[in-house]
Length: 629
Picture 1 (cartoon, rainbow, N blue to C red):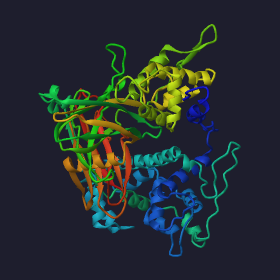
Picture 2 (cartoon, rainbow, N blue to C red; picture 1 turned 120 degrees about the vertical axis):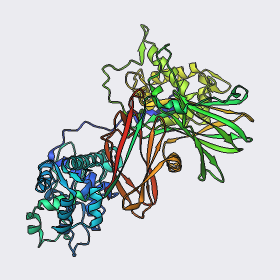
Picture 3 (cartoon, helix red, strand yellow; picture 1 turned 60 degrees about the horizontal axis):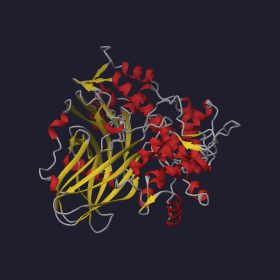
Picture 4 (cartoon, helix red, strand yellow; picture 1 turned 180 degrees about the horizontal axis):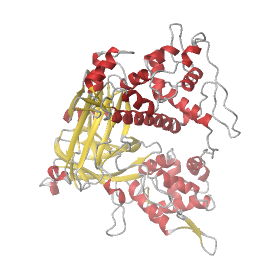
């Protein structure tokens, strides 16, 4: 954002780069290009670069799974013989051309051969005989895992129609997830993949991949001509889910009445401090927010609250983001910032306010705001008409429109963290970091003070308006830089705040005045992820995967949300398939009913947050967690 005619080049260039997006319109992809895109997406889910080689059967199996295949051991052995040392990306593409995805019709046909009653199910006894006695045999433990899958087994029968639907949905979702991941990561889009590069506008035909010398020539003909039989497909499919565990939780309408937040009786006599902040939704769906340090001088009873900030200037028309859930995790700083101890979080609620009351000893605490992401998400809403930001009068002088001035006033309200009606350099720099990625230094701030309305070395609301007007004048009325600022702050082309949620934090203490300072604006991960996992492990319901005591699903229920965490105590990473299809009146932060997550060895991760779609109605959380690998 420009500050003065002498400084505008240096100051406004921070945003100009963001407004010139390199995205170019492409022709529709050919079938060949779609095939290679899917190959790359699957390969880069397993490897950091397509220049890396597959060096084990396990890696080949995992890469093929991410490409929507579900290979049997027989299929793996075709391409990984005792003489095979490694396979490259081009080899992988050849394998995918040969090994077509299993169709739903093929799976149903395989199962139907055992369906003696023609009712869409197979007796467990018959299934057990098939899987342990014929063809590619399974172990007793593997069969038990199959018949224990909660959502496809009942009354001693295996519902293969449900299973086929579940399997096909999972395959489609895996493919969709891998391609979306590739699209989001610009670094991967710029890579060269094997001998195939990104398609150019000229649409050169994709080169035919050349197999490495490591693919065995002698057995190729018989390997490729022997299309796997139906039993191999059946065995490979049933092995996809090793075991599962399910949760069912029924929540009543308006159930938050049981844990209502109440203020301490003597709160009017307590000392209070307030700070504002904001959640911002990034392009990839990640949420970032301000983070704070709080100082408590002596042991005190403390009352903390966080709630969405209502910016509506129209009486009786509240801000639409007031339904976004907010929370505050309080961590104590011990010897250093890396060693933070979870103390508590704001789990009680009164309407849109979440809070906590308790005793805190003297020291430094970190306050990390959180939102589940269930109600702050990308909104696919077509904008029919772009709002006008500036106009010229009959003399040619440039002005900000009334609508834009109102929006800037709201932005000022959000970035004025201490609420004193003025912007300090620190407050302004949070705004600059968000909109341009750079800070304003002391020299530039001095220029700002000389050219715009300030009080006590802080920028007034009018000064902030004039700053934006000068930026528009510097661009001769071109609003593109202004739109970069607005999009960064969460506004769409209709000047609606759709991808951000401002909030306000209030802290009361009975023995001393708390001090609070915003110190970072970071992704809601890292320390926050650790804090959420720890709170769920401490208070949630834990269920062990049958036969896999090192894989545990923890579920923590509050009156207005449910959080699940997966704990992997094993030495290997695992992939967990998550199915929420039977839940009712529920939304989750991932926006998908079916998805899969990868959990690193010796780690915990937040799997999903769930909230009611309509709080005035009963909501039922029914989820099946299945171990894939």
